[in-house]
Length: 255
Image 1 (cartoon, rainbow, N blue to C red):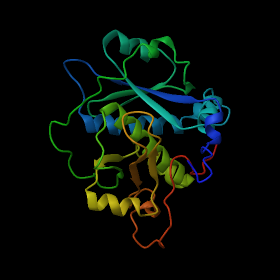
Image 2 (cartoon, rainbow, N blue to C red):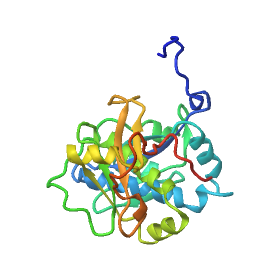
Image 3 (cartoon, one colour):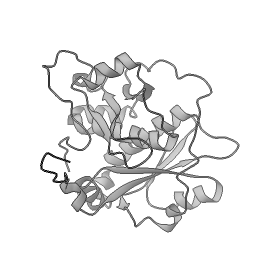
């Protein structure tokens, strides 16, 4: 509440709300590792944003524009067996990682999911890494996770998608083209507390969750470019005091 007790209202909340659905394949006998699922979800969002159907006069462009005009919501559900096959039959695209498979679909109204997706569970996406993730591959951009947060894999996959989208918006056309042609090399890693403090004080894009599910409102992911892609979006500590990094909800973006 403000000093005059007038509730803060966000004009985006007055618009029709859409969500970008993602479905991760989790078979009982072969679940993917957590980090691979997060990275695959991030690449799935990027493949969707760069797809010709999502831009210009493409078949999904109107839905994408409506989605971007309101809050940028993503929801991850899980599927296996026949559920996965039914989901895979709907319009969308599937991205495969080392183990994970994630399918992303055009945005739908918040309360208007296709029945094949609406019946899928949001819970049950608690995945583990059998071993600690290795170093960030050379040239890959990095999505740094807030070390103070505990999130289910599904929630973290949605946040990784947000972080990838922010970095995509912040790149110029040349960087986008090069990154896409290289297959969107990226890594998702948890920052150390000291590194996280430097990241959030920098000029880098930061995802701030609205706090609708699982966690309190606040920063979740900071997106950092690499020497190969978006070198201007690498960690800097020389910004003037009081300069805020961009966030998912305020970063200008192209249609």
